[in-house]
Image (cartoon, rainbow, N blue to C red; front, side, top):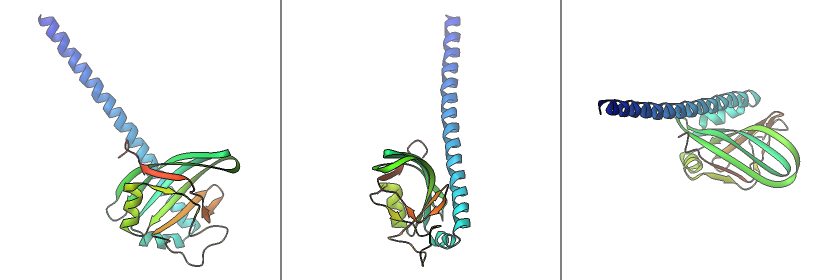
Length: 186
C-alpha cells in the first residue's frame, strides 16, 4: 500500500511537471513569435523613415501604428497572409494581429512586403484593432518612390505605406485583405 501511494505521488508530480513544461514551451514559443514581430515592426519603421523622412512627421502626430509582414502569392488567383502588431504609442500597448488576403487578377509569382499603418486618432485605431478591418479596394499610400504626394497627410484617419523589395510604393494594394486579433499571442 505504501509503495502504491509513493508511486501515485511520483506519477502526480511527473504529470504536473510535464504540464508545466508544456505550458512554458508554449509561452516561450509565443514570446519568440512576439519578439520576431516586434523586431520586424521596428526595422520596417526605420526603413520607412529612411526612405520617406516626411513619414516621420506623420508618425510623430499619429495616435498609433501597425506593421504587418506579408507574403502574397499569385497564379491568376492571389492569396497571402502574415502577422503584425498594432501599437497605441502613448501607453506602448501592443495588440498582435493576423492578416489574410485573396483576390483574382493577372499575376504570376510571389512577393514579400511589409505594410505600415499610421492612425490619426483613437477611433480609427480602436476600430482597426478591436473590430478588425477589411480593405475592399486598393488604398493610396501617402508616399512612394514613383512620386510623392504634394502633401503628406492622413486620409480618413489613416495613412498606409507598403515596403517591398523594390522600395516604398505609392499604391498599397490592400484589396481583399482582412486584419484581426491573434488570440494566441494576446
